Length: 504
Length: 100
Image (cartoon, rainbow over all chains, first blue to last red; front, side, top):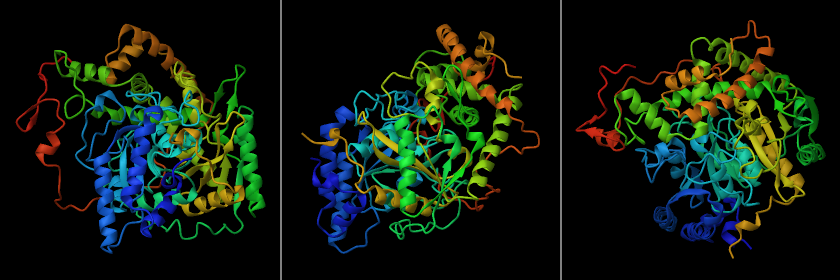
């Protein structure tokens, strides 16, 4: 059995703390004890802050006792991905180049969590600089999937997904550039939301692909996702891409089914290459929503089509477009790691400044980061810019138009999150392209800037989590979450916790 | 036009990227990056004449901050992570006269 506190959803725990049934200190202690006991196995955390968490929890209990007003996450123990700057501890991005970097400030979302009186337990593992789909690119250590320790948790927010699944936090933050919240959420059997681009401030999120990056929650269900989103969303003048638009109360009408919900079944996502159990899970989700009163309509995203060649290899315009855009942006963003201002600097004697840069970066970056910087540099370089980068930006427009057209006939799209369930360690590490295809169903959502939600959909015959993805129109998270809640209610039982979450 | 990633091109891109490569990496990356670039070439199948490039997911307009002095990082905080410093300055090897 998972203990009582760790069994509770974030919403339930918040309620119990507000009612004085559970103290924030007990909640923090329950999670910290579990991390102590289980994280050796899961390896979700890069760093845990026990003293800081207990101190914060104690403050919340004192303030509650004094009758002070508390924030919407008062006493809820959460974790944040280690590419979000925190003035406490280190911010490593799971990279050697930032192994000892202490950020001088908190990211906007970290400030918001603190303002909401959440208790941050620590920082979670990721693929180095959020580049990867398995967390195997972490320079520190791989995180294990709590459902099967021989399999990856997905990535890049693998640490946050594993921590939520193994009940090592009540909820967590991740970041999603091409699927980095949704795919690990799917692999670990939890919910994960990439909000609309501009809904959540990126200030203090270590930049990877700036036109695609978005911070979002990983949580146990739609309700906890709504709670977390409400806490972190909103305008921030420090991020010029943050949109000044009111934040609805995502919980207010969550339990109210969407009248006449139109669910778009994406024709191109019924690919032959899709795992049969996942395809069945998507169909089943459609049936459940229809039974709950939704209308199913067929929609088309032609430029997100998935082709299978004679060798069985998948390809899609969206994947090609995405990797050009993301790598081009990465090559610019990661130019800042130069061994001068912060981060690793080579200890070798160097002849000049260029050698200092080149050797520092050779020592500090892992292979995947080097590949992406080089590919992005290539795509932006003289002679190739038009053929790759400019072409990709035009294709991005075509992909976006497909979404605009689809949302003229439906309210949410339904499809898979990933082409398969959690894979084994090492299965894709020798072939970067195969790894990139893990994102084939999630990346067009980032290119279009719309919100996407991964939701648990039962277990496969092999006992691994299945998931479906719901996609909404821009700034339509409220309806998206209500649709997700309709699906959860139709399904009945909440998504289970893995056996690894149990304290022995 | 798109080309393959031969050794000369890989070394050129590595120099532009400011990343030193071992000879072994030149070979491995040449193969891997060549595969990936060939995959990207799929985009050339699509006609995009007259399509406006989309640099951004949302129709964003220029966003200006108020022209007011505000808080910024104190020198000690800004220098706290410096690998090498000299007083209130970042310290680097000789720059002038470097061939690149």
